Image (cartoon, rainbow, N blue to C red):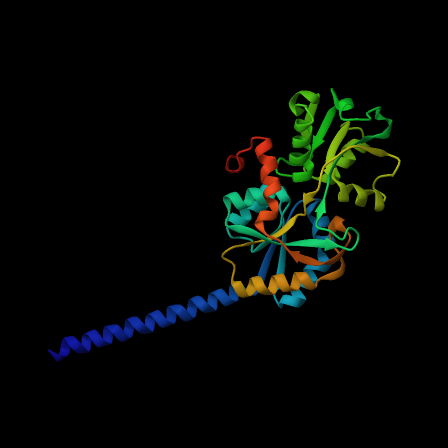
Length: 296
């Protein structure tokens, strides 16, 4: 009877040792994975320009978290959402609508928004702009003209202006003679300035930034429509990200100040936000009768 007992004890010891080894290896792998933080950036500009404009924030994030931060810019919003869903990104900077879309198909949540010294708030607006010499002075004047939206998943570059037009009694499908998606706010502005299209919907801050950088002249374009406030583009993270990493990242972002953040100007830190702040975006999707999940 003793031999089977020794065999059982040996087998139990071996199993326990294997379990301990597996736990150690798993913990080591998890720890190693957290040495690098992958962050996705929305394609507001071309990829290299977006990385350059975010460079100081990324450097500060590295210094304050002690982690290597690896930026990634997709060609469109869906590229970032897919990377989050595939767990190739830990954190991402998304537009309001692309966040709502991501939350419906990937296990992510908004946790922080940028506050700039220029605006002092975490909201922005959508504008419809035209050339001053176009003869277009109102939304009614857009009838029969060509128009540029940014991206199907862009809040200020598509969804909010489209909803605004519908609520004003216009059908965008019939209002314009031709509609294109430019891919970025900058491209839309240049398309109007270079007479490739007659009008475009863009974010107010990107319009202001283009003028400040000398890419557009103040007297070149005019605004014929302005939206109500849109909640600021959020930082989001995967819900399954290590809680310790979440705490590090949130604390670091809150402390990043006096550095430029893309088209938004000088940062005054990132403040906490929640998923509920984007219900206004979901309501806009309902006005447009959009099925969020069908868009992925």
